[in-house]
Length: 390
Image (cartoon, rainbow, N blue to C red):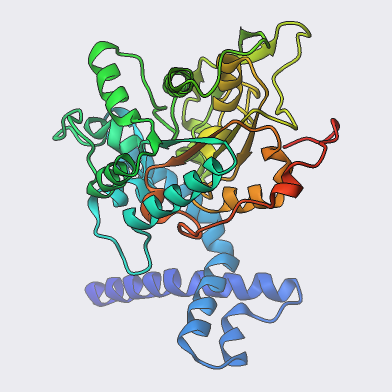
């Protein structure tokens, strides 16, 4: 008899767990005067698309899910080292971006871009710029996973070569076509052998100030070496501007409980300040060097502390007017489309620096479309000094 009662209690308990959240949701929606979300399915045709949308709407509307999800995420993160769909936890607390890992470990999917398409877009862009007397230098930013695979898994070793065949193919095709490409992969490998300074942030998908500075140095040095530009006359100084930030990979988990417990990373950034005025670097409306890129350019530059990113440091190296077109995830095509809409940025340009993260060879937003340059007449119109590129 006691066993039967105990079994009944267990059954009732589990039924209450199953029925509790839906009943709570109905009560909350009734108090708001809303039609129950669970019944919305009867208002539309039962197509696969509508059913998926219905499932997503239930998850987003659920009071229980919104209350419990952050706590469950925190439990999974700290107890099971599970960072969810967008991030992966490596040894020693390093975090990595899942699409970057997938780029290195997974086969291309239907619809993904190819190295051939990326190289074709770069060749056409180089040729169009060259027709106007403008030089192009391509600067792929390595995935964090390509530079620190040993921080992703203890079974891995520091890289001895470019890890992705697609990246190798893109670099080889650019070299064969005579495109000026900066090989940060080899540079970062050599730096790791001679220095313990981190080139990427532990909690973030982007380069550290040290990794960014190396990239700016080699780009400016290559431009001077090729004779495309000589050092200019604008002098800049560096002002230390250390910050403490939660990395973007932590923020992607979208759990306040995790963000509250993770120790912010200390970042030794340096702002670029114009020597004659003491003003922080800002984009020039009529640049001699135009930089196109993604969030690797945004970090430190338009994020905290500001005027401390790749574009600002490149301006310091060149001593000349510099501006940037920046689009998170859109460096493959969207930045060139934006350039077409802003032709005045090419009016005085002598060099274009094109940065994009390595994984965009396959995963770039809008792929690698062929985008023409804006008409020469539009690019040569006078530039109002009040116009900003931000």
